[in-house]
Image (tube, rainbow, N blue to C red):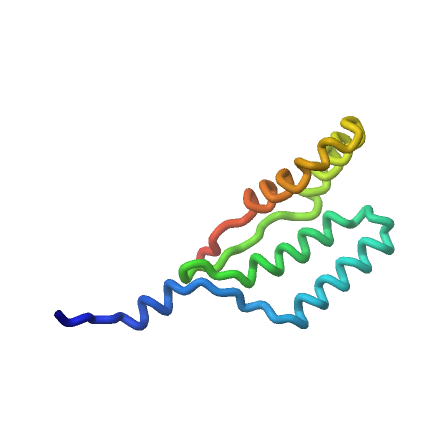
Length: 113
C-alpha cells in the first residue's frame, strides 16, 4: 500500500502563532502606561489593543484570524459590567471574565483574502 503525502496541503492546514516576544512586551507596556496615565479609563482600549495583536497573529488550520472589536464598542459593555459588579457587591465579577471572553469571541472572525 503506497501513501501519498501532500506536503502543500499539510502546510496550508497548519495552526500557529507568528507574533514575537518583543512585540508582545511593547504592546503590554504601552497598554499598561495608557491605563495608568488615564487612571483606568482607557483600560478597554488597552484590552482591545493587546487582544487584537494576539488574535491577528494567530492562524488556525491555515486561516488567519482577525479581531474587529473596538475600544468604543467594549467601553459600553465595560461600564455595564462594572455597574453590575458594584450593584451585586462584587458577585458579578465572577462572571466578568466570561462576559469579556464572549465579547472577544463575538468580534473574532477568519480574515478573508
